[in-house]
Every structure is written in structure tokens, then in C-alpha cells.
Length: 300
Image (cartoon, one colour):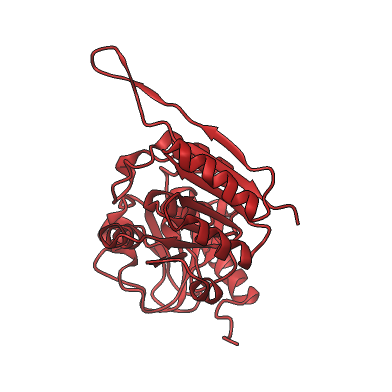
């Protein structure tokens, strides 16, 4: 078993260090141990005024990644060593992009422009990928139906934008993102790197071997395709009680998906259609594609 680097005693000593040397109200601080698996610093800094982050030596790109994600104005309080003693320094992230983490230690990141609300249904320009396939309003409904908890393992098949949003919501869990198209997969991996998301793993297909190597998903989203029925079987075999959400623009496929879920033991699948219209420049409403959303969970 890997020895825990930041014990309770060390965490308390770092908190006392910053309490004595900074004007930050520690009551407002969010603490996170980035050395542990699946911890995402950038989304956490975006949504909290102050983050006490416990970092491991060797991360040479963290400040560049933060600056690249629009966090250049954040203030970082830090010291030069690996123990909480001596003088504390502070600089803007934008002035630290050429340096990395040289010692395992805690740093305090202050973001005066943080948003304390949960991001859901993000506008398309937020992504480093083409998110036009599923609009932000529709994604809002889908994410509501997925009901993701922060510690959930989420499987997303066929939507890079939802993979990114799920990673923000499952902040202490994991996202298994599946993209069959190589171009979409490359774009997703670029977006994962852009936001330095450490709880996303990208795959090119769904099968039993892949799922057995990962934590059993609690929630799954699938864009309906010829392989969806087989994917549903694999997923429910791993976790019979998982919450499943399926998206399609095809009414015939929607009806078939309800039958697929019923055959898998989900008897009360819900089917709904979402219609969104936007006011165009000519003052006429322009209808957007109206998808069908099928959701269900087997009673175990």
C-alpha cells in the first residue's frame, strides 16, 4: 500500500502555517490532496475563493495549465520548501507559468473571480471541442437525469462535451469516456489536457474487458448507435442498478431503446422529447434539433 504523503498531522501544520502568514479566512478554504487519484485542481479553483492544495513534486506544467484555463489572475501563496516553515511568498499564476512544483508541499490558491455555483449545461465556447452536437440546454436536462454525485464513476459514450461536464461534477470520482471516432477522441484528450482533468480516462470502445479493468460505473450516458444494445448489456452486467441515460434524434431508435432497456430488466424506462427554439436575427424563432432522452434504472 502506498504510504500517505499528507497525513492529518501534516495537513494541520500547513493550515497553521498559512493561518499565521496570510490574510485569508481559513473558514472559506477548500482543501484537496492533488497527490491522490482523480483530483482536479483547475475546476476546484474555478469554483472556490480559496483552495489549499497539497501538491507532489515534479508537476512542471500546473501553473501553465491554470493560466491556459483562464486563471492567470489567481494569487498563489507558497513557500520554497517541503515543510511549513519560513517566509511565505505570493505571486499571480500568470507570473509563475515557467515554474513547476519542485517540492511536495501545500500551496494556497486564491481566486477572487470564482463561481460558487455548479457548472451545468456549459455554453459551447467553454469547450476545446466541438460541442454543437448536443446543445447546452439539452445537456442541462441530460445532466439532471444522470444525477451525478461527486464520488460517482460515470461512463459516457459518444459525447465529449458531456464527458467534460461529468468530470466537473464527479469531482472525486471518475469518468470513463468512450469515443469511437478517432478525431473526436483526439479532440477530447486535448480538452482533458487543457483543463488538466485527472479523473478522465479515454477509450475507443466498450467491452467487458475494458469495464472489468475499471471501477464499476454508477451512471452511464450513451448516444444511441448500432452498438448501444450490446453496450447496455455490458454495463448492466457490471452494475445491475446503474442509472442509464440514452440520447437519440431518431424516434424509431427511441422506441427501440425503450425495448432494449426493458429486455435488460428496466421496466419503467422514461422517454421524453426536448424542444428548444432560439430567436434568430430576423425575429423569428429557429427550432433546434429535438432529441429523445430515454432514462431508466433497474429495481434491484
